[in-house]
Image 1: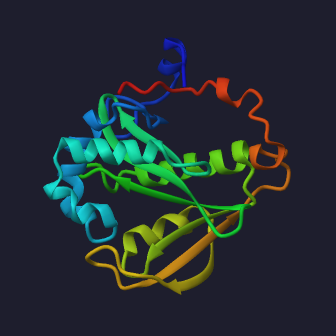
Image 2 (image 1 turned 90 degrees about the vertical axis):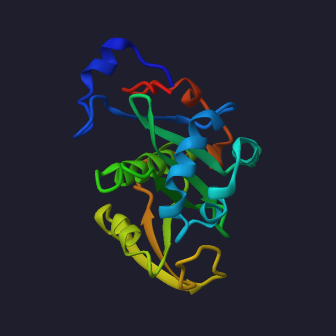
Amino acid sequence: MTVSQSQQEELDNWPGYNHPLACRVLREGDQKILYPVMKQSASRLKGFIGWAKYAPSWDFIEVSRFVKDHLEHDFPRFHLVFSIGKKLVGFGSLAPMQSPYDIQVALWVASGHEGKGIGLWIVNVLQWYAFHVFGYHNVFYQHDSSNRASGKLPQKLGYEFSHNFEDEKTATAESGLWYSWKKERPSHLPPGVIETGDWGNWTEMRFPWVSLI
């Protein structure tokens, strides 16, 4: 993602910060920025994210392996890092569902940056990719029933309740009962990559922000 300095200056700073909120695709070497943030955030995230319960004991090599594993994920898995200035503030992913036309969003917000609308923006960016670029028919947001904070995000963004299901507990505070929310793709959008197989000009897409990390 590239952008001119003039375009960057047109963006408002994120409320409470001195820079706009930006994102880019996860890339090799990102363990340098992820390591301190994952370690700092692990105690708060371990209740609802499986990897976080192990992260307090992780060293730099383990976080490097985390990045390597994510970079090796096959499509449709897709990962973005979110930043404000030179601070990493969140991480977001698209993950496959049973139907090849459905996708789900997953995210976490770094400690110290919660409650500032960053999670909402992460979901918005992920669903934009899902609908506009990839062409998925439905985007799902799923969370454990005990994670009430996470459960507020899809409702604020117009997702509708789809179903609930039981799953294996992988994090310390999970109940095992999950809620699934769904948003349908706008009907006016042209077919995306999953239907055409053509990336077209998307790889050259220019966004009105620049990531400083």
